[in-house]
Image (cartoon, rainbow, N blue to C red; front, side):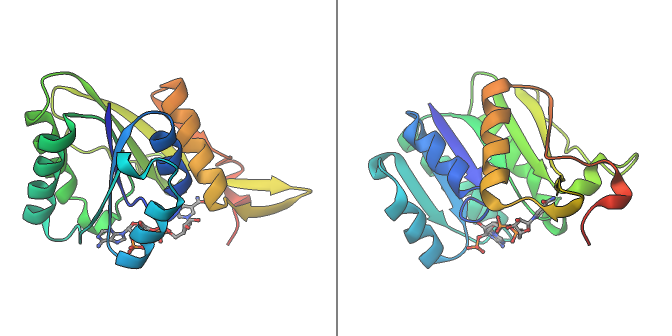
Length: 183
Ligand SMILES: NC(=O)c1ccc[n+]([C@@H]2O[C@H](COP(=O)([O-])OP(=O)(O)OC[C@H]3O[C@@H](n4cnc5c(N)ncnc54)[C@H](OP(=O)(O)O)[C@@H]3O)[C@@H](O)[C@H]2O)c1
C-alpha cells in the first residue's frame, strides 16, 4: 500500500512515520533538504520512505514526481494533505493526477486550520470520482481554563486517529467555544 504525505516534515512527521512503520510505502513531499533528511533518519523502515524535496508551487514538477513514485511503488491509496490556502488551485490538479494513475478508489485526508469549522468558511476541492474525502480540522485545547493551540504531536495523533477511524470529519481537539480559542 502506498501513501503520499504533502507537507510531511512539520506537524505531520509523526503521522508520516506511523504510516511508514505500519507497513505502508510512504512518499513525502516537503521543501527543505535538511528536514527531509531528518525525517528519513527517524524512520525505522527507511527503505519504505521516499522523501521528495519539491516546492509545491512548481506544479508540473510535483505531478511528474508523483507519477514516478507511482511507477516505482504502485498507485496511491491514501493522500494526507497539508497545503496552504495560497496554493489551493494546485490541489485539484494533484487529485486528478493521482486519480488518473489509480484504477481503484483512494482516500484523501485534508488537514485544515480551525477556521474550516466556521459556517461558510470550509473549502473542499473539486474531487475526482475515485476520491473518498476526509476532513481533518485542527482545533485547540483547554486545560484548567487556559486555551492553547495543539502541539505537533497532538496534530499527528489526530491524523492517525482519522486514518484509523475513517470518519468523514475529524476535529482534533476542540473548536468550541470559538471565542475562547487562543490568540
Ligand atoms: N489549530 C491548530 O492547532 C493549528 C492549525 C494550523 C497550524 N498550526 C500550527 O502552526 C504551525 C506551523 O504551521 P506550518 O504550516 O508551518 O506547518 P508545518 O507542518 O510545521 O510545516 C509545513 C509543511 O509543509 C511543507 N511546505 C511548506 N511550504 C512548502 C512548499 N512551498 N513546497 C513544499 N512543501 C512545503 C513544509 O516543508 P518545509 O518545512 O521544508 O518548508 C512542511 O513539511 C504547526 O506546527 C502547527 O502547530 C496549528
